[in-house]
Length: 316
Figure 1 (cartoon, helix red, strand yellow):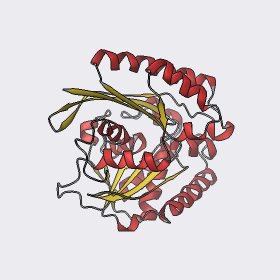
Figure 2 (cartoon, rainbow, N blue to C red):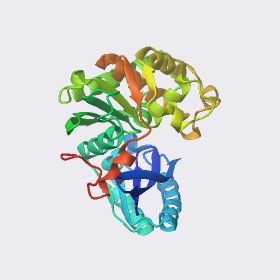
Figure 3 (cartoon, rainbow, N blue to C red):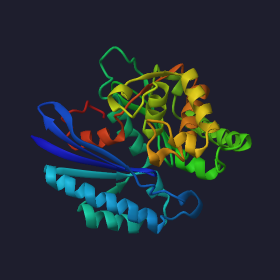
Figure 4 (spheres, one colour):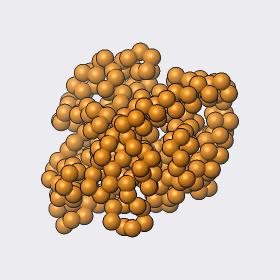
C-alpha cells in the first residue's frame, strides 16, 4: 500500500497528514497540527522573524522523523500566504530543504484555492446531501481563499489578504477590541469579500463549505463541545445566526475568557475573534443561511495530488 505525506505551512499553523492508499480509498494514518505563527509580524515588517522560523523548524524536524518512521513514499509540502509575502522567504525555503529533503512549494492563491476545494469537497460530491455548486471558503492566518466549483471541478477562485492573524495584527489590537477596531476590521473584510465576488460567483453556490481552524473552532463552540472533537465537527451545519452570535461573543471576551473555553487551542486564543468575524461577514455579505464545516481542506487536497490522480475526477 502506498503512503504519502502532505504538509501545509500557513501563516498560523504547520500541519502534517500521512495517508495510505488502499485500493481506491485514501485513509489517515497520522494527522497533526501545531501553531507555529510563522507569519507573526509579516504584515508589518514584510519578513519572517527569527523566533518564528525557529518555532517552525523545530516542528518540521519532528514531522520529518514521523514521515520516515511511517515510511511515506511521496512527500509534498505547500507554503501559502505568509511565505508569498516574506522578503526573506529563501531562508525559510533553505531550512525546509535541509530538514525535510524536499522543496517547499510556494503556491499561488489560485493553486491554494484549488487544493482546498479538492480536499474539502471530495466527500461531498455525489452524496445528494450537499448540492452543488459549492462555495469553499478557507479562512487562514494571512489570507482567505474563495472557490466556487461543482462536480467537474473549480469554476472560479480568488485569494484575498484577510485572515485571522492579519486582521488581528492590523486592527484588533485591544483586549477585547474596541467597537472602532471591530468596525475597521469589518470594513476591511467586506472590501475583500467584494473583491473576491467580482470574479467568483458566490451567489451561484448552493452549499457554503467553511474550512480551517477558525471555522472548526467556531463550530465547536456553537455545538457546545466541552473539548475539541473533529468527528463531531466534521460536516456540522451552522446557521448564520449561530455564527453571528458566536463571533460577537468572542469579540466581547478578553484573552482569559477565550482561553478558558474548552475547545480553544492555545495558539488560537489571540486570533479567534478575527477568524470568527471573517466567517460571519462571508455569511452576511454572501447571504448564506448556513455553512457546512469541513475538517478536510488543503491538507487533504495535497495528499490527493500525490496519488497519481487515482482519486481525482477529470479536471481536478
